[in-house]
Length: 200
Image 1 (cartoon, rainbow, N blue to C red):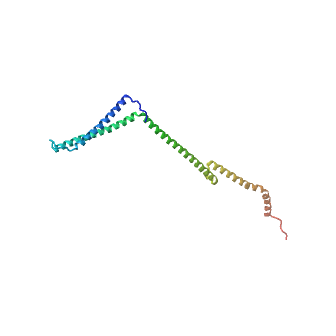
Image 2 (spheres, rainbow, N blue to C red):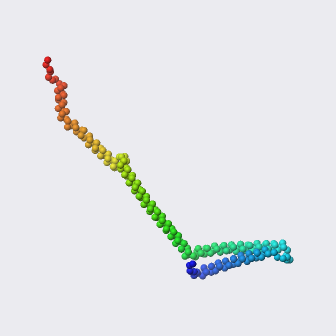
Image 3 (cartoon, rainbow, N blue to C red):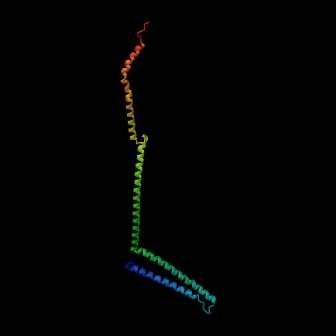
């Protein structure tokens, strides 16, 4: 148990009054209960009739029972006052409870931080694997419509240049064969004109 601390005079007086209230209430309960037990005893015949004596005993029992109830309520009020005094004046215990609660909350915070970091790492790894899988599959199966706009335009230019390169030899081939075609043309024209006649 912690060492007793010296209390101010006002607090010491208050505690003494609490102690006196406790003793008075307990004594009142004990005395009234004892008198109720005494009234239950059957006495010999007296000058007072039994009916009158019964009514008197009944009234006395009711009064003493009310005194017991009042003393009990006073004890309950004393308990409430003691709790309030302890809460308002026992600062070391209050500070200790606050420190314990702070330690519990810090431990909970650290545990949550560790779990969040672990979850972040796992999500990062999974996301990296998914990105690799996506880009590897898209690079092997993608089409122009699936490409970004700039890359699709670049591929379209390459296709146009390739088509122009293939059509250029086709256009140049008649020029290279122009000589034979022109030389063949007169021969054909001569064939159509008057030629040597066969003599019979």
